[in-house]
Each structure stands twice: as structure tokens, then as C-alpha cells.
Image: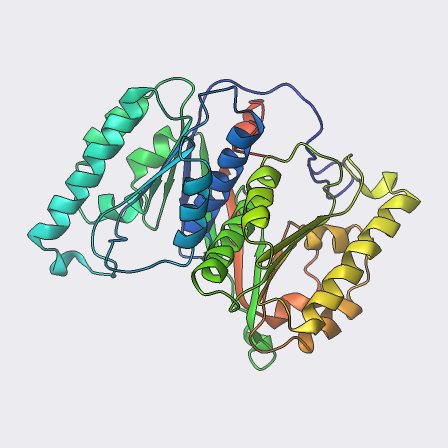
Length: 379
């Protein structure tokens, strides 16, 4: 996607791969588990869109996230489970706290083994199209599971199965068999230390995981709104993604139907890839239309979480000016979170305002090897 600058893939009909890939999201930056949640949202949406296809079931298996703690996204996942019990299973194991090698207890080993037994059964069953092993990377790093056993099971997975692993410190043996490896790197802006505004998060870079991290963040926020009515209203605003065919739409629409007071979703743009030398008048009109919605949402204080998906390449393509975005972010309500995504060749000025800036660095991507993208995972 570097021809004549930045271009964003759309959901136009194309051939799709049938084989599943092994994804690894690691690194010190934020966004790893969120990216996995974003894929879960897309996969559920695919299952809603194609109910005749029984092979659209997701297992979200979460290590180091025990049941004694409530997570924001649990409300949204539970709502989707109630509406579509045939599409998603969730299992949580371990204790919900950070600990090091010198703090491991017999309980930790037992819980890790329990989670892995569930994972092995799910992988062998052929019942799932996607299995998410959230935070298995640090479990392996802590020595709670045998790395060689995990690698052998993953290597012998059913051909169609998509497997996603997340967490810091993925072992090299896992990276060696991965088809996709995205590393989330934290960025700091020391010259702008006095400028940054709490509640602005930016996900950029060439690796996979930016939009899915934003979708995962949206799922967390929707769950927070469901669990605590009136505390969180969410806007998902997406640029350069006109048309239809995006699998997350069905899952978001299902949540909107059940909880209309919690989530709003808008797309803008043509159903085509926009390059710098192929910009059309409609691209400017659509970009401005999206920004007018976003600007009003930021200023209103009605929304506590606002996703500005693919805003960065929209600015990079010069479809929107930078200064109005900076001014809107400077004036945002204190308790409003704004999440901005997308790659860009030149960092716009509003990057200096971010309290969190995570670059998704691409070590491996199956698309670079000529492997087709997959509906319900990539778009």
C-alpha cells in the first residue's frame, strides 16, 4: 500500500484465502489484546452475516485474566453471546494481576494448564474458525507452559483455523512459525511533554493491528456502557471506508439494536482505494462530512469514547487540514477518550498531543507473501 503514498484497502469483493494463519501481537506498546478483540468483533459479524455457514465460531481464551475481576468488554461480549450463542465462547483463566518469575504460585501453573487444555481441545475440534490465545505470550515467557508443546500443537492446527496470540515477550520459537508478527512499540514525544492531553490515543505504523485495536477499544467502551448505563456512549467514525462488506458492521449493528443509547457508527468515503494521484472531489467531500460529525461529537461531551479510524491517512492524503483537528482535540472534554488510527508518512501536529502513541511495527505479514486477505479477520 505504498503506491503513490498512502492507500487503504476497502471491502470490495476480491478473492479470499481459505487457509488460516498464525498471528502474533507482542511488544511493549498498547493495543495487543485490543487487536485480538477487534478480530473477535469482525469474526462474530461475519457469522451474523452468513448464518448458513456453521464454520464461523470464535473462542476467546484469556490467560492471566481471572474471573475475580470484571473487564470493560465483558458486557459487550456477554450481549453478543446472548444474541448469538452459536458464534462465541469465552474462557478466562489465571489471576487478574501482574506478577514476575519470583511470584509464581502452584495456582498459576494449574490455571495456565487448564487454559491450555481448553485451547488444545478447541484447536483439535474443528469447531472454530478463530481461536484467540490472549496473553499466552507472557504465560510462555514465565515458563507456565512448555513452549515446545504449544508450538507443536499450533503447527498441527487444522488448515482453515486462524490463531491469534497476544502479549509481551513472545518466545522466538513462536515468532518463527508465525505468519504475521506485529510488534506494538510505544512512542514518547519528550519535546511535547507539556502539551499531551490525557485520553488521546494514536495507533499508527505499517503493521496489522491499528483498526482492529480501535475496534477492540470500541468493544471495551461499549461493554462499559452496557455494564454502567449512562456512563459511556461510543462513536465509531471511519474514513476511507465507504461502501459495504466490512464484517464488523453486523456485530456493531446487533449491539446498536440492543443498546441504541450506547453506540453510534458512521462510515465515509468511496468504496475504492484512494491514492494521492487519484483523489476525486468526492473524496474531499466525504472526508469533510466525516470530520463535521467527529468535530461535533468531540465538542458535545455526549460521547465518552470516540474512534477516529483511518484519520491519519486521510490527513496524509491532504483530504483534511491538520489545524482544525488540533484545535478540536485541545478543546475536548477532559473525560472524553479519542482514539486515532492509520498509517502516515508524515506525523501531523496532533501526534504531540497524544498521551499514548503506539506504532504497530510489521515484522511479518502474509499479505507481503502474496497471501490473500480473509473476510472476518482482515476486513
